[in-house]
Image 1 (tube, rainbow, N blue to C red):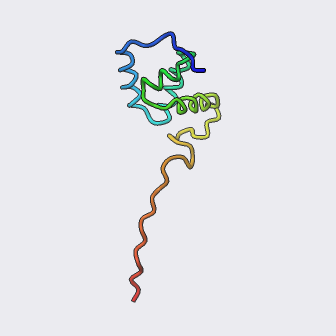
Image 2: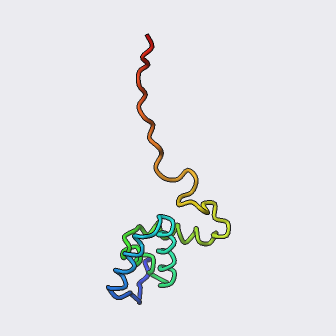
Image 3: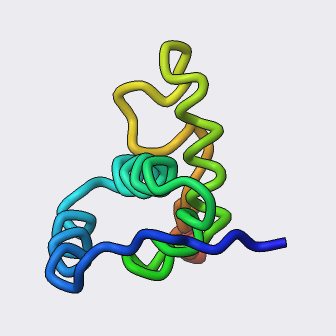
Length: 98
């Protein structure tokens, strides 16, 4: 059952949140959204996801990441090792051996 948020930020604060969110790295965006959602309490994940335009699942994963910050395997990185888009392989050229 989804929680109902009792507190919402004023529209100008939501606009500042969106602007700040856009300046952060991917990892920092997730963590900022999770921090804001936690501060708001019940219903915060849904609300923050709507304000900043990210998925609720992203915020939930970031909340899990933050529980393990002292042991962050992606410290100094934006993504975990092996995460992200795979590199494209350039097409092979036919051999011109004569």
